[in-house]
Length: 213
Image (cartoon, rainbow, N blue to C red):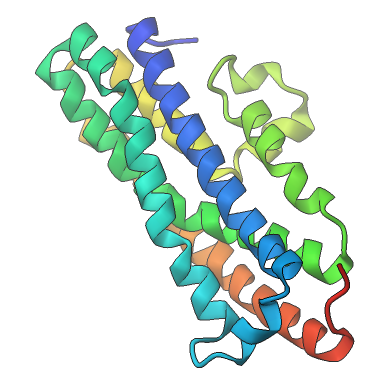
């Protein structure tokens, strides 16, 4: 797999994957939970509105979830690489936080589609897809071409790549991590530009057709 320390890599990358799946699952299913609880119209009528409540309300749980997941792997990282291992975990946590923004965008897009088309499969496929195309347990080049293309639009793929880079080099190579940061920033802008109008469509759809559970 092209990693320097396999144990350090698999522990760190697994922590990245778990935290990312937690963020996506919580964010996407929150929209459906609001529908099932019957509070979606009330949130839409509140001063903040659905878009602000959804986008901003998801950030804090995502930050806490990611911190817990990466903290859990910190002892192994310290055991395998000493204090430098802890530094690398903190660096990856920072990248996970950066990836959280586009991950929430993706989750909100899927949740919005599920509400508009009344089809939960848009949400249900997210976690298996991330597990498949993230490249944690096998190289992305082993995947069919279609899935390889999908892997490049999933933010967690790039954080896993950062974990791989950090497992190879003793001293973190910041120059090799800058391009990953750039991609995650671009994804943050793109996916949330799509997600925000998606929530507006949900509001219009609910006002027009109401909620069917």
